[in-house]
Image 1: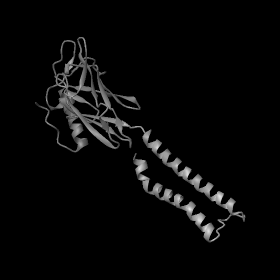
Image 2 (image 1 turned 180 degrees about the vertical axis):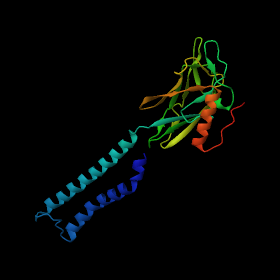
Image 3 (image 1 turned 90 degrees about the vertical axis):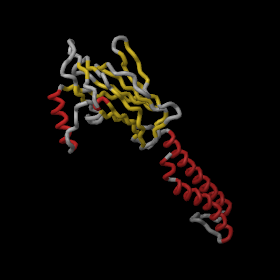
Image 4 (image 1 turned 135 degrees about the vertical axis):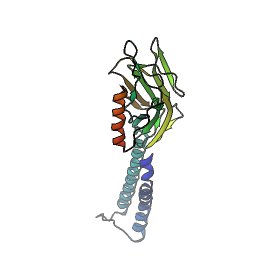
Length: 245
């Protein structure tokens, strides 16, 4: 309830002023014969006017506090994810494939550090994401093994079709916060639909509609991968990474 916390000082001051204004006016009317700008000599009418005004102000302050509390309680998180494989830009997986493809041209990635990925779930809003969940579907891809910390689905002949991480009801991602999820290992990943391979990521949390993102996956031969790593190094201002096991 960040908004409410930020406004606690002025809400407190206004409330104290309103609570003190009514009695102060009544005392001033009784001792110093304050008129408070009312053009009447009827003291009872003046007292009733002051009481009504003070009551209305108290109701107004209470309404503002309730509105702030409602806004903070009903705020929605805004989740984002970053999947970064070694030697690839975030959310842009690029892999070196073996030069020798299978007879049906299915290509498998070379097994070195490029197969490992970090996964970071971020909440860019001010509101906590409760019961977060992440699903990663393999589109045009297969061959990976079970992933520690992830649940998997299996499809006949294709192996693991999707991975799913559930934060559970006791797990939240605080506002303007991030959470590192279990790492991924895509050893033996194989492309069976060239040009259409992708990771399809769905993010979910209580109170928000699932958000689905498609991340295309590229398989490159040795020459293409060397050109890619050189270009990437230039963009990063680094030396080209070693691409051998």
